[in-house]
Amino acid sequence: MGRPSRNIFSITCFSLIGWAAAAFVSGDTDISPQNTINVDVCVIGGGAAGTYAAIKSKDLKKTVAVVEQQGRLGGHTKTYIDPVSKKPIELGVAEYEDIPVVREWFARFQIPLYSYNFTIPGVSTEYVDFQTGQTATPKQGDLLGAWDAFQKQVAKYPYLHQSLDSVPFPVPADLLLPFGQFIEKYKLEDAVPYLSLYGQGWGNCVTLPTLLAIKYFPPFFFSPASLYGQGLGALAAKDNSLVYDMATKELEPNVLLNSTVLSMDRSAADVVVVTVNTPSGRKLIRAKKLISAIPPIIDNLKGFDLNETEIPIFNKFQGHSWYVGLINNSGIPDNVSLIGYGTNNDDNFNIPVLPGVYDIFATVVPGLHYFSFVGNDSTPSFTQSQVKTYLQDTVTRMQTNGSIPSSSEGAKTFNIIDFESHTPYEVFVPSEEIAKGFYNKLFALQGQRNTYWTGAAFVTHSSAGIWNYTDQLVTKMWSQGPGTVEISTS
Image (cartoon, rainbow, N blue to C red):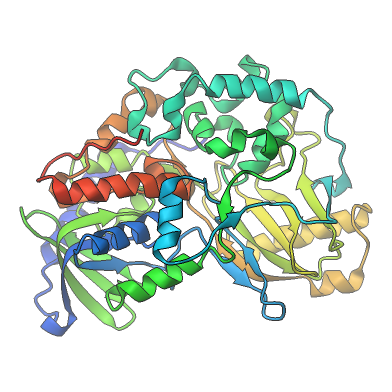
């Protein structure tokens, strides 16, 4: 997918040596009993999957420890609260599919849900080529016809709204096509502006396997109301982060924030031993089972004692870089949202040129605009400073070309007031690996070495889908004996 191949043999040999060493020291006999945590399950990662897995296990009367590298639970859910108006602005997960697991999850914490509508009264939308700073005029096409054709194609694969272990093998040929080729084959070009607007975090969508591109869109996305901007038929809380704040309080004191796995030993039949680096020093976790709920790219698993079966699987994963945040003093009017349009990017259906600014939206707080910045297939990550430079250069080009009002004072004081990295995002594997049965091999790991895996890489980037899969995984994890756990998400 545009990235250089890696030498699997050399990585595997090096990794096995490193992870074997990690397992050897995982006993850490110098860690005191006061810093040893004995629980039924250790959960690595406190995003949507990890938090749900921890609370679900707790509700099943199991003891739990959670290890999270950030200073909060929530993962891709991040809510900014304006200090003056107290209004929330979501910088990640904005809405949820209206299915029972979502309603039950929020009801458990007594958090009310509301119908989600992404529109803001009085705000107009304009198209801008962020590379040139000039106002853009999208090509006029048959959106409704293309949309209808796209829905007919999606309807051929009802299992795509389930976890990835439901995909048949061999995988249908159309689902292995790069999404751009799939679009051309079925003449869906006129639907791309809408598709790419919703899929802003998936990098260059035309290179993504069609299987994963289609899975990115939840069922409510295909409702007529969503197409006409009348709402998505989805749900949201007033503050989507509240559920994670309340979960944190329930799971304390065994929520280890700002913490990372140093080493792990999963060789015993009845215990997993994890050494964790925390702000207060090293802690030892001894658990009967381990749940990994982090993006399973190889760099994220450095503290794991991966074996010769796991390494070749996780080494195949890649991820996209996506950053969002809030800017002020940009000169962009409060009642204007800007959508990126790549005027000269015809080969990629005129999606914005990457890496670069993808869109800039008005918010419910005057003076604040939400931005989305997306990397390309060859750029693994960006710093906040680099993103700010891209943003400021983009604003300057728009002012110079008259796309937004010129304001030298605004340009000087332009600032990012909140910044959130969603990197790595949309973790994926190339089509050739999917064709070889990658997902069969991945899901065969469930239950092996007392370890269970969940998260977006096993479903898609949908909190509802992740919770649904994790609910069944955890239930069967505690009801079945050692060995592979099979999940049905129909």
